Figure (spheres, rainbow, N blue to C red):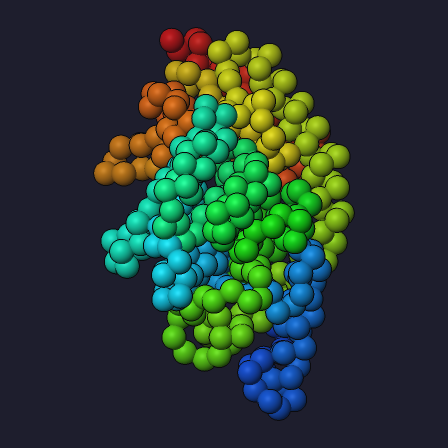
Length: 383
Ligand SMILES: Cc1ncc(COP(=O)(O)O)c(C=O)c1O
């Protein structure tokens, strides 16, 4: 028996997605070709784009398909600052200290290669960004773009995007948000959020890997970061991944059902899990427990129990969970994101992420709690 509690890493394909992708395997035309085979592929792509657009309440032309969430984030940040008109308005990129590496490292690259300066807004112990720091940075001027994620992949903490957007609008600065971990889990209306760009990745919501999208206001100047054809309205060159796009269209089809299930069934299961875990250990604490979080995610720390050890022990018991730690030069390093919360390094090494999925059952949560209790028992005996 394998219980999969690593749904923030990726999710199993929904049945409808498998079907749509299997059908798309027969469509071999290039959507840029004008003949019948090309038109067939174009039709498939248009249908999928309409589904994705409907999920986020935008028009089809506001959806740019990319090869991943990683590429979508790169495209927005690199593409935005590659435009001389945008650079003139401001050459500073503001991000938060808890961004995914694909935003964090892109910001570092932009600084190194293109002279775009970077300011990193800090977060408090709960993972919420310091709005005063953001305001002060905007006040100082020269900010070209603010890129702050919606929900965090390691902790599930959701940023107060409404306040962030309101502040940025006050200073006339554009906002990008990485919504990879919230799309499909909480209702997202691009218009109501008020952002200018948003990133999504379909393998986090029952779709295939290797397909993401930028959702953007149609009238913003942004350079294409790949040189080549005029695909995706000149925003992203390269022949489109029609099979992946068909999967993306299918996984967004019943998005309201997914969001409702996440809120009404999976959220309560996550809460039950957290309650049970706290009963097993007095020392255990949950990062961002008192804040608004994505309903499927919990990140717990049991001081003294290293995340890597827990992952291996739980794996042997049939449970897939993860840490945010990275192995570098043979040593396990604590997650940059967990450290950013002000959690000391020895405790940050103990962070364990458990992310439930739409397929999660109560029996799985109960079985996990039993396995976790046994692991803690073994640990106590060994000490
Ligand atoms: C918050 C966040 N942004 C971006 C990404 C990258 O998405 P992809 O795996 O599609 O490259 C991830 C993936 O884990 C993520 O969690």
